[in-house]
Image (cartoon, rainbow, N blue to C red; front, side, top):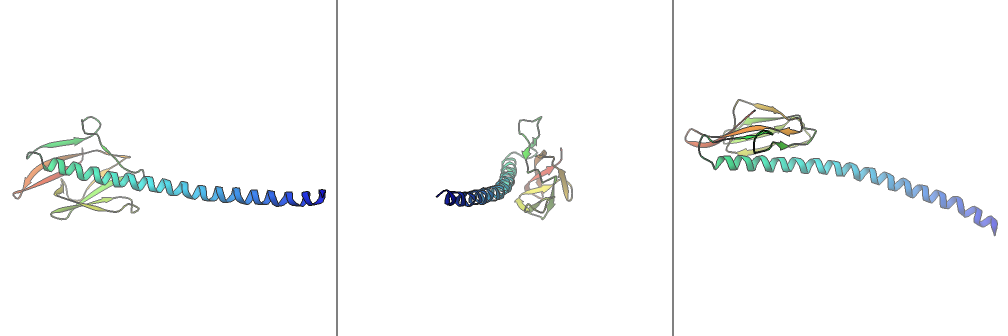
Length: 147
């Protein structure tokens, strides 16, 4: 009887090691996916906040200026760490918002126009900018510019 108990013990250790290895492997995989999901969620939140800011300024009086910075009442928007700059490309009625990291998708915003052709704003984890309501060609447009 003693020999049988001695033979069972190595199998229990091997099974325990395999189980721990699977837990560690899947744990690291899901931690990585959680980080990726968090960054994507932060980018979607940035998109939503930027669109909301544009629509709020669009509804104000012409020549209204709103600044998004730490010194103003409107705080800058946060962006994922992987984005170091955001560019704006005027497409006429819309403006294409292009992050410098191809991991994140571009998107468009209606009634937004960059102050300069192909405007790019650096974003060291925060996005500080100015929005101004202007009438251009008898249409209300929100002009975005760097601070």
